[in-house]
Length: 516
Image (cartoon, rainbow, N blue to C red):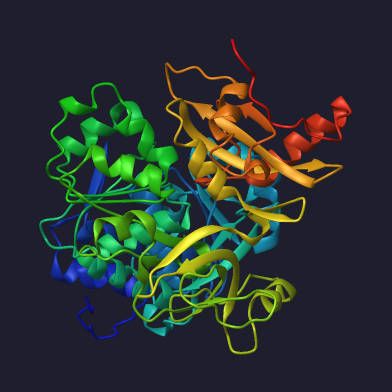
């Protein structure tokens, strides 16, 4: 299918919310369990807060941190910052003092807008929403017409699989063009109500909210995600599109024992990522919905690719879909830079209007990831099919080199997910004196299930190549998270420290336990 050509209409975030307020003043814009706001209310509140920011001395280009729970106020502050020409810096609500200190210092925040609960954490830099609102003069003019679409609107700090967070600069144009593209790709209409539980300090959460506002449909968010109340919320809010995104969010909902008792027939689209085995499993739980997947990252403002709704079911389970409108993607040999043919894995590079503009205050890292022609080198290993759909395989650094053999962590994870006791798995490299590195699997077991390390190793033996079989299996109840991504570098350090302290330099050979 060829998508309908739409006119390019980038705008600023401030003008976006004001335009929708003019067109649909009384329609629900955002919905939370304890509050909701119409477009008119959200626009008016953002203007009030923008005047307050100006009253506190915020100027165009200043960085304004946002440390708030998911709420109407968080979105109102985001739009308020945009209206002043300043740059919003969403702060991970899970951060503690050291992590917060890094973001505050690196971004050079002029102000950090929080709530009373965060005052002790941030000290003098902190100003709560009420104080911002009170700081504005009633007649104070917000000159948002001077804001350019290519100005930086948001800096999203992303750590991914590395230890040092980087501030990705996202422009008004990048965010609003992607938001429009998502609405088109998901075919959003006035009848839709879109749910996600992605945190609103996360780039994906912001983009999903902007997609709904652009399309004029309610954005439904739980505030604090709780799988024990999600089915009720989806049903009561008559959600039609579930942007579940990650299995760490969606699987606990699908696995509720009372799942079958809820009428979720309103849901027509579910978006989630995962290996094909898991995606097929997810799709089987809601067979009446179209299930789509994506390739996404902060550096592309969220979705880089997304399945079309009329893609065949198998393509939606095995690929991340076509590039978003305006985005150009290539798969290259990371050694030679030459394009790889369809079906051959390589490094993903891309460019286009939704791409970020570099890492804030980090020209060296920016220069390292952009080539002379403006292509961003992602460090992701992907494969393209003959129709241009991309499938994420692993990070270049998530590739293990086991005795000279390449092992994609995702391949081992996909196989382990086939075991009925495995809920979530992350495979990382463990150091080894003989093979250099070997696979180590961290596993979260399904509720009520039991499994041993040896049983999981035997699940792999004879089914995947021996060098791909995990040599160590460790069970976890909680994951080190960066937003909604598992911090694999923490897991690598954990297994390396354990082996070092135990004096283990060579992994045991994986063997079946023998007759019982």
